[in-house]
Length: 299
Ligand code: HXC
Ligand code: NAP
Image 1 (cartoon, rainbow, N blue to C red):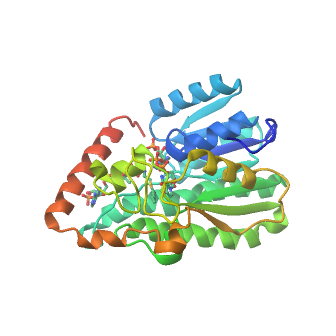
Image 2 (image 1 turned 90 degrees about the vertical axis):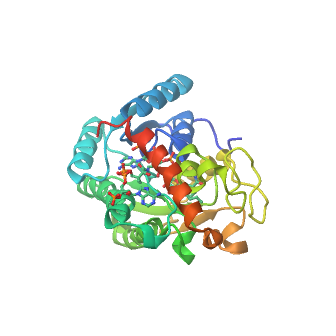
């Protein structure tokens, strides 16, 4: 159910990082549907190409796939040059991320960096590469970062993600002020559970958890509303924040979580009851998903 006029984003040029799958794909789809020219980036070329093709055909518009690993600052800058050579971006959605559940004591430095390099460093590289071009070209622009509610209360068993997302929350607030004179606004969305394959493979492997997350196939969840999020709800919020009309709104992080954060914290504190054997099984399942996804990457 869309809430907006069908040409609301006509003429806008928007990059959605991690737009080949999951929530990024949903937002890219909605933006293309509402008339925007959309770019999507990620590491798995074939996955991106497939999504770009499907969305272009569905909306009779151009959705461009760009293979780019946002952990690599030079690659991000090259991608941004390519995009801006076709014309300035108007919007950026920082959606790409990595995550997995683990006891923090079981993490290696490399395991921490696997997440932080994507979420904390990569998101900054993309924001900087767009922002410096916008400032130089005096171009009005809009950034939305996809966070989680645990930026407010912490993320037990997802500590590298929680630390990194909290950093991007503060980036949002800091740059909302620093870049306001340049007509650039930055806001963020903190979704509760919206089942996707990428997240559920790594945060609910084997659909073992029927608690706050719900399972990928079962829409019930331990939020006050008793359900997980529906994609159109996220798509509408991401459109509202991207469109013109509320240009005074900046520096805000908006939860869309059925009251989950307010009701029970919205994080994974309940995993404290798991023992060694369960954590070993979880790690093996996550490894299998990571290995399958990595096999599709060339960057
Ligand atoms: C402990 C683990 C681990 C696990 C990996 N590692 N899985 N450590 N427990 N379950 C460690 C590895 O042992 C290794 O360290 C290091 O992490 C890097 O592992 P790689 O497999 O080589 O990583 P890489 O190929 O770089 O992949 C990055 C990734 C992967 C983050 C690990 O999951 C990925 O590509 N994710 C992208 C998609 C994704 O995560 N989507 C979900 C977003 S959902 P050593 O020391 O052994 O070398 C989200 C919030 C949802 O963000 C909120 C819901 C409410
Ligand atoms: P997803 O489908 O796994 O999306 C993550 C995307 O990021 C993938 O398309 C992935 O593509 C891309 N990505 C990862 N590392 C990258 C890198 N180094 N460079 C470029 N792209 C990279 O999972 P999702 O659930 O849709 O998550 C999307 C966003 O929503 C994330 O920010 C997540 O934290 C947030 N979120 C999700 C939920 C939820 O319930 N689903 C809740 C709260 C927040 P490649 O692997 O091809 O690179």
